[in-house]
Image (tube, rainbow, N blue to C red; front, side, top):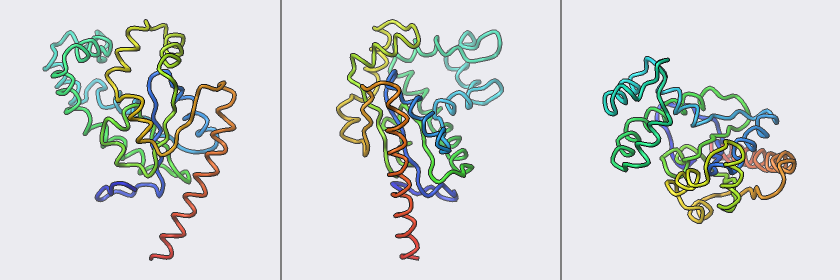
Amino acid sequence: MKSTESKTRLPPLIIGLTGGIGSGKSTVAKAFRQLGIETVDADQASRAVVEPGMPALAAIAEQFGPDIIQADGQLDRAALRQIIFADPGQKQWLESLLHPLIRHWIIQQLEAATSPYVILESPLLFETDQHQLVAKTLLVDLPTELQIERACARDANQADQIQRIIDAQMPRAEKLSRADIVLDNTQSEESIAPRVGALHQTLLSLLNSNLDTQEKNS
């Protein structure tokens, strides 16, 4: 593993799954779950740490004003997204608040996992220090044009809005250079399950090899 967390008992093999908006990352994660592999979702972590009553939500309201909180007490994510995309300074402030909290939540979920290996699903795996938690990185990759097309079809978003999200993240070429494993998702959705199945067998072999090495060195 690339980094050792102190006082934690993380699974023996954690795979970081990442990909940009519209890449099909969630579909790949679902295929792993269907094989009995647990997944920890960084997006879920980002929602959990700003639930009503959480200290982070109060800090956000103080920073951005009470209107950032909806009538039901939930964070107005759309309004917050507009603010931080328009102001890099505010984006940096928000990340400095949330990233440590998200990391702590993720570690707790990883510690609780019981499957042979665990998937950490994170759209910002490379952009944050979350990549330090994983042994291998798996990138679900698409050309940008197809990424925009699929994201627009899925969420009825405007192409320019999707492009802004892509531009705010790490460039595709850099992600490709950093990934240990690349899953080309230009193929049909029906092809994902069998390809993930083959990858699953490879990861089980890697896990067994790692465990054998640890036993020999112990």
